[in-house]
Length: 136
Image 1 (cartoon, helix red, strand yellow):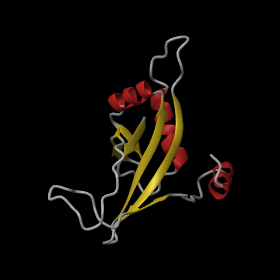
Image 2: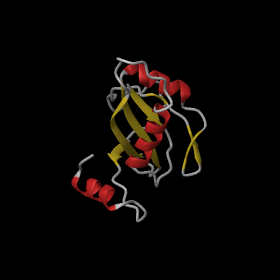
Image 3: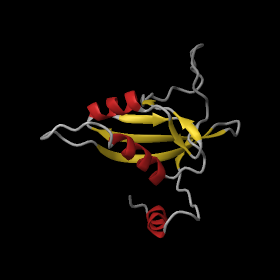
């Protein structure tokens, strides 16, 4: 299950987001002989629309789906860089044909989405290496 975490602080790194989710999943009760919860991918995404508005969002893949449902139910009062976060299930929306926009459509036109490879001086050398060479 993919979990969408909207409006994370701009200084958030993939590692910080992964650590936040891992710490929350550690609180989940685990039955013996059942698969453990695992985080697949974890990305900080930069959204920029045609008007120049920039937002940062997190996208985390959690397996199995039951663990993702548990995470959504227990993702309360989670803070990152002093900002209160919330999470919801990611909905994969198909891109619409330009010019055909229903009246109730809230999605923005000309949305550019890129993965963030943030460099911060307080991040250790191993994280820096991963960011530069694309390993996770």
